[in-house]
Amino acid sequence: MDWLISETLDIGDRFDKHLARRLPEMSRSRLQDLIKGGHATLNGKPAKAGATLRSGDAVSLMVPDVAEVEIKAQNIPLTILYEDTDIVVLDKASGLVVHPAEGNPDGTLVNALLHHIGDLSGIGGEMRPGIVHRLDKDTSGCMVVAKHDIAHRRLTEAFSERRISKIYLAVVNGVPKEESGRIQTSIGRHPVDRKRMSNLLDGAGKDAVTEWKRLAVDQGCALIQCRLLTGRTHQIRVHMRESLQCAILGDPIYANPAKQRVQVPRLMLHAWKLSFNHPIHDQPLAFVAKLPTEFEGWMNCVQG
Image (tube, rainbow, N blue to C red; front, side, top):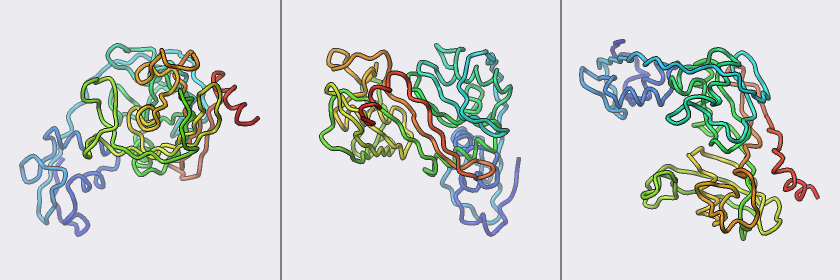
């Protein structure tokens, strides 16, 4: 597709912002990938995302065909909290991988959703249809899934602009000295252990913000409520381990099993509450994922 820059609104705008406004059906991450891949040109040359547009500039965008990958629909039980023609909100079980990948070609949430719904938003790519955000395999709790591209794009923007509230519960090994706090670091891939994420210095990594509050203490461990203001990979797990020096119980990557005060059968991290405005109708929605059995005793300490 080709067009010329002529509108006053577009003149002086960044190239990537112009594409996002002109092509609202495409996610920003998808557009960034097209720019980086050289599929978007400005006056016949590969464009940079931050290029400034001028009157008369010629823009061209070539969207390559998506390679077909067959993902099997599988009848895997799901706990649906809400569903309409635009979105599905569900309570993901601990141990369920969100999308197919090398080593997990099936038996994932996406396979289950394809059986339940039949078709999903394609913006996320052929391996992640409908997936707006993700939970780690061993994390349970609330997730929202988009059924079509418009819902996907608007939800993605809401996450990016921090208009979605995400509250988690975590049981950590040890007791933080403070009762509450706010952690703000830069998180990126660990320089040595590539399976881990880590707080990085000197501005490397991506901004990560977690607000936390201690709810209960028992057996030298603590129940922590975490409110995510960003959504970085392993964010809560890194902030608990590296910033509070209290790894989440049952964490196979960040916890030391020999030092755990309490033995647990799973990662003790649960996406408890999720609230946002509906991507199409804009009405407020709020959801609570039922506490897993492993968390009930800890919540009884709070209520008692």
